[in-house]
Amino acid sequence: MYTATAVFDLLLPGDSRSLKAKRSYVRPIVAALRRFEVSAAEVGALDLHGRAELGVAVVAAEAAHAREVLDSCERLVAGRPEIELLSVRRRLYGGDD
Image (cartoon, rainbow, N blue to C red; front, side, top):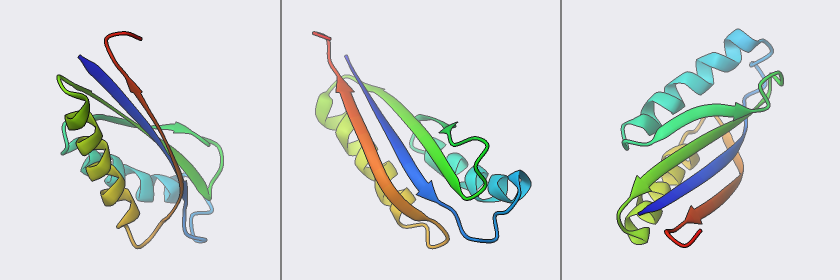
């Protein structure tokens, strides 16, 4: 069994000057990520209006499948025209960890 995680650091558009506006950008992305059957949530920069950190976790029988799912999630986030993906931090945990 393998568990893979990714944390996406996002720069939101300049019009996200309130937490309500921030949510209007973050919620659709989290909903879209969940279609990949992963756990997804906003995990950091909670009080910053122009930034967001989204966390994604997946459990798979094979390490390659876990990586493929995270690749798909990264492509989805990077393909969103309204936000800028600043960085991605990934970790893969196997049966030996």
